[in-house]
Every structure is written in C-alpha cells, then in structure tokens.
Image 1 (tube, rainbow, N blue to C red):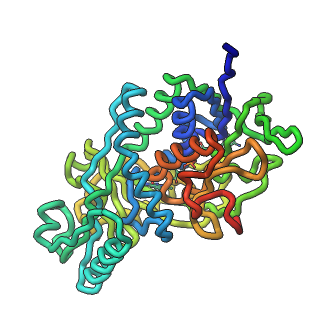
Image 2 (image 1 turned 60 degrees about the vertical axis):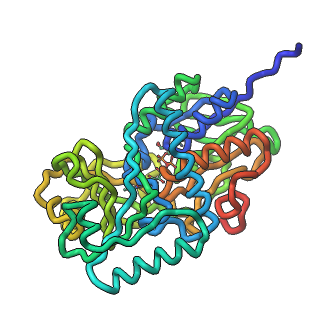
Image 3 (image 1 turned 180 degrees about the horizontal axis):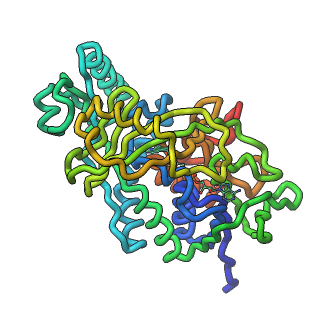
Length: 380
Ligand SMILES: Cc1cc2nc3c(=O)[nH]c(=O)nc-3n(C[C@H](O)[C@H](O)[C@H](O)COP(=O)(O)OP(=O)(O)OC[C@H]3O[C@@H](n4cnc5c(N)ncnc54)[C@H](O)[C@@H]3O)c2cc1C
C-alpha cells in the first residue's frame, strides 16, 4: 500500500485561538507546529475572565454570529472534558449562569426587554427574571438595594489560566510541537501558494499556514491587513472568602467573575490603544483605574471594597472596525488561513471556531463557519 504522508500545519500565536486549533487539528491526524513570540498563553487570553456568555455583557450584535456563539457554548462541555482528560488536569468550569442587576424600574424594564429579545430569536436559551428575594437567595452578597435581576441560567465560566495550560499540555500529549520565543516575521510563498513562515530563527515549512497572532497578524510581512482596532481592557483581582460570589455579576459598566477559591475578577475598561501586538498582556495598570474598578463593582457587591487587591492586569481585545466580528477562514492565498478579531468573546467562541476551522482546512468547504465571521466577507 502506498504510504500517505501526514499533513502538516504551522500556526502563529499560542493564544486560545491558536492552541485550540492546534489541539483540534492534531487530534484529527495533522502534525502541527505552533510558533509563539513569547510563551504559550501569555497574550490577551491570559487577561480574559473566562465567561462563556452569548448574551450577558451584550454578546455579539449579529443574530447569526450569536447562533454560532451558542453552538460554541454547547460545544464547551465536551471540549472541556476532552482537553482536561488529554492534559490530565482538572479545569474549573462552573455552570451557574450570569446575573445582570437592576436598581430601578426602568432598569428592570430593560432587562425584561432583553428576555423578550432572547425569546424572539427563537433559540432555546434559559433567561429568567428575578425579583429581589430570588436575587438575594441566589447571591446573598449583592447590594440589597437592587430590586431584581436577570439570570442567564445557561451561561458559565471557565478558569482561563488553567485552560491555557491544559490546552498546551493536551496539545503536546497529542504531538503538537510548540516553539516559544520565536517571532513569525513573514509568509513564504511559491507563486500563489503559501508554504510556510519565516521566523526570527529560520523557516518552518508546512502544507497549511494559520495566522492566529491576534493584532500581530498585521505585522507579518506579505500578509494583507485586517482592519482592526486594539481595545485595552484593564482589570483587577480581589480575594474574599470562597463562595462570596458564585457566578458572574454585571451591572452597567461593571462586571465581576469569581473562582471557587475566593478570587474575584473585577473589570473591565474598554479603551482604544495602539499598544504593540507583542505586548498583549501587561501586569500593571494605572492605580486610579484600579480604584475606579473597585468603586464601580462595589455598587453591585459592596463587600468587594473591603477585600485585598491581589492582582491587576490589562489585555488587548481585537475589534474589526467594519463589524466587530471575528475573521475566520482562508486568507488571500492558497494554503493560508486566519483566526483573529475575537474582541470580547474569544474564550466563548474557541471550541466552535477551532472545530469549524479545522473542518475547513480538512475539507476545503466553509461548512460550519457562518457568513458573518467568514474571512471572505466584504470590507475587511
Ligand atoms: C479584560 C478582558 C476580559 C475578557 N474576558 C473575556 C471573557 O470573559 N470571555 C471571553 O470569551 N472572552 C473574554 N475576553 C476576550 C478574549 O480574551 C480574547 O478574545 C481572546 O483571548 C483572543 O485570543 P487570541 O488567541 O486571538 O489572542 P492571544 O491570546 O493574544 O494570542 C495571540 C498570541 O500571538 C502571539 N503573537 C503575536 N504576534 C506574533 C508573531 N509575529 N509571531 C508569533 N507569535 C505572535 C502573542 O504573543 C499572543 O500570545 C476578554 C478580554 C479582556 C482584555
């Protein structure tokens, strides 16, 4: 029998997008190399709260993308089990939903309108209004001045730091090769075909090349740009007693997400930035911003004001200027693919995106990638 050669892929960027795709491709029979400028999982993905949230926090504006995000939310259960089994490490994932609070009647009406919109989309998704008693029964430490809230019951959160470590380990156990502290500088072309990348240390040739460097895709020689704006998100962590808050709680511009060990992330700002794509995560923020975040979140849960601040950081979200939707699929040349522009939902969307993009790479048919995030849409 003729020997079939294992197909190869090189992926630039070891964030949630690059590592999820690497894991998916490798376990479907490819030999994958990931090249990361810093260390795996040290970019924007490290800044994420890990909320899996198609609706709360606004979610995607486009109903077609929302459907895809909902698919991803459903994919999460199996994805979580697969990654943690292959990595041989548990990943905290909590399915207690997300709460949005209301402090007056007009805010209650707004939340009711959201429930109506969810129902009108005709998608099975559990969103229910809570009165004050029900709200306090669910989260006893929210501000008792709140008059009610909306519980997106089906939403969840995942511990992103552990997830990133697990994605790397799971990938490695399956055979993914990680090259860290190496920079993708350009693509290598033979005519119209991309056959690999030029890096700071040499060349990596592969059947398929994938750009998953976040805003870094626009700094790779020979690659047509995606119009994106960097939006910095600053955040802080406080430490309280375990269980003080059990689910993500949002009010106005504030949102917090707990971990089971008592850590609570408070966030986050949205500021335009021109920061370098190689500095996608930073572990210091302006002390005034830290104070602002504490005060803002203390409206929803007053007790957080008394907790010790244990960490602060910022990350860059990639917002496509045309429609704020991701860019996933083939990119300009044969053999070249892209996965970027995930803005505030890259963790939520990671399983469905990895599965759909691996499928496109394998079958060459767009299939599972919805038109609203496809890289061949006009205006990018
Ligand atoms: C404060 C904050 C909170 C968030 N909360 C959530 C949330 O709760 N839920 C959610 O779904 N999403 C959330 N997000 C969004 C989410 O973090 C992003 O959408 C997601 O992490 C983007 O992943 P990525 O893999 O595209 O980027 P990254 O994780 O940044 O990965 C890109 C990698 O490419 C590397 N790189 C860049 N250039 C090169 C190069 N030339 N060569 C090699 N490597 C290169 C970088 O070093 C980086 O490691 C949040 C974001 C922020 C800032």
